[in-house]
Length: 390
Ligand code: DP6
Image (cartoon, rainbow, N blue to C red; front, side, top):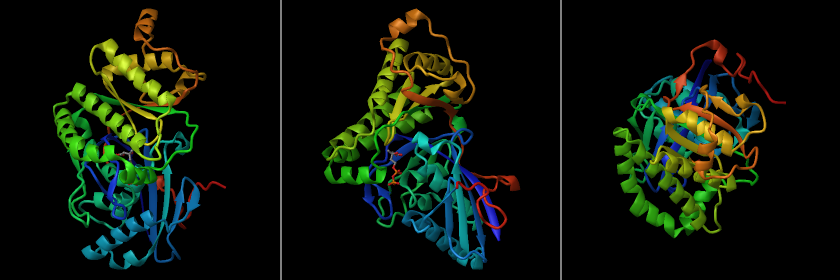
């Protein structure tokens, strides 16, 4: 029997991956760039146990048993076992069955992308248990494309690669988290009313129907990748902010150019966009940036010294009905009190109370890690979850 427990981070793309050139191997049409968030506030945690006594592979997600036959899970298991067998490590162990138990440290109901952290954690934990070294991003990619970026910390690029077998479609680190320590992130969790179209389905439809996607891939993304890499390496926030916002806007324009359209942002999301542009106008430069994935939640980037003012203004424009500390989670911080004159000069009307569920204040962070303490395991010694939802 062998057991390991690991945590893996969420990542947020600033140059979006949207569209596959190979659906089975999960190979993208374009390169993407992301930031890895700290696991202190958002992460997936996974325990994996292998034993000669287990009758079958089993999987529990957030306390409920799920189908382990899911092809994306099976792809990851198969690839890891193949690598383990090739390296000659633990030869007999690669035939043993596995029990997997995974949880997120943030509510799934928040609608935050959890599959990237989940698959990165699964693959990282498997790599520890089977003692595999070297790149694991190509394995995580076969669980969910964006998961390949969560196996590394800081600023990460997923190179689309050109090979048909995907051997060069890998993630690489552009800069570690401590390269830009002043960078802060606010996740704005928005109330969601509509059932969302999954990224998988949305991007399949875009590849089939969007002319704009073709233009984006050939004419826009390559230059943006070069520019944002420079902005990151030079710690040029203005440039980073502008490219990030433009790429988010173009990605959602592609979604609207898809037929039938994939609508991910809602009225609150658009109010957040307006908020950011009002803030930047007030400051006279791009001090705040937004990006939106396949859902209405926003991810805002700013430097540390802007956080109290941004939070102060957010509380005025997006008033919260309940207790303050259930509104702003994550890194503790005192928000600014906004004087009447600033509120008036801001140029935006107050939104309906409760249009934001809550805000998570976080920073950049490192890639996955193993938790060595026995207390961290999510499975008991006999391989069943300690916390089952009944
Ligand atoms: C909008 O990685 O969830 O978040 O590869 O089908 O699992 P699959 O899709 P997924 O797509 C993420 C899309 C995105 C942009 C991004 O993270 O780059």
